[in-house]
Length: 262
Image (cartoon, rainbow, N blue to C red; front, top):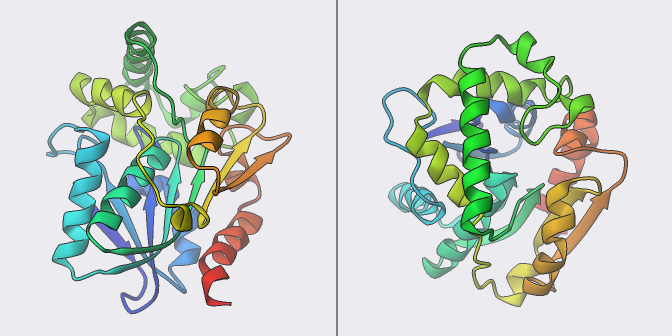
């Protein structure tokens, strides 16, 4: 795993976690602005860049982040932000950081899967992900944007999702079948780690109402973390609000960061 940092290291710290099969730069449309006032750390998962080992597990990826923070003497995190698979890794990261007595002030997770699925379902998803990555390795960004769909993005959202698609096209040549398998496992084996109520109160989950994962996991998420904050959006697709209305989205992130300082 490698770590990209942006901004002044004396500023409050935000950790930003990407979606599956995405490089750190897929979040540039957010961290380029936030780096003015925050020190932003964007881990790049194993298996997502040339020369790295394969992606491992949700627990091991999160633990590498914990070790990085410990090695750099970081004891307070202003915000953990995660998109899609990054949300599940983010929840595991919170659980581990609390054990290491590293403070997490708030968290904001967009479009997380948070599901535990049977073997057959995971096998089908793994096959689909392999097919998608094979296509990504052999086509340009413009060609991919014109697909009927790109994994989680529906037909009308592919142009909106161009920053993520560009990242996936760049990352695809480095992602092995083993990494694909492990990322599929990561997304569909969520085990709802224990999070104390006072931490739950500072976690924010957001979904588009049309997302398949919202319909599948929302009730389980509320049952597991009843003190957390939940928001649904109408008329949006997977992660599209952050891309379509970036300025508003950044204001939300800043408001969450600042809420404990008011």
